[in-house]
Image 1 (cartoon, helix red, strand yellow):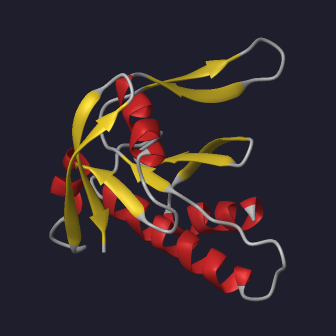
Image 2 (cartoon, rainbow, N blue to C red):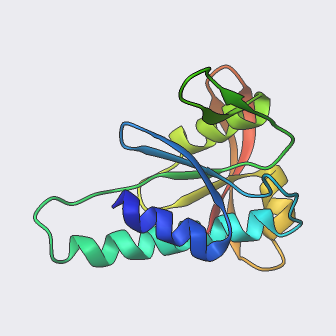
Length: 144
């Protein structure tokens, strides 16, 4: 499954950062800023959902996915001394994690900031202000 996700990231032009358990973290606009990063993230998310739907039709173990997307400034850096790892830090990555955990299986949950960047290309539904652990209430949308 993650190999397929990697292929999707490469085809869409996003950067895989890491996997944690069954979580997959990727970013757009790094290392080179990209004004279309949010659109590319939604396209990748749609392809991941379509892939899992198709895969689940022929496999006994059914995978589900929650996808959260947030846009904003982050700090990126190389971690370690012997085995280097590229990682992301800052409020934007923390908010993205809260957006994901506040979502629903098979849906793309986005922040208001990301919604402003993609609303001319993707229809969406306002979910209202959703309590996000440690962040208070955040405006969230589902991409339709």
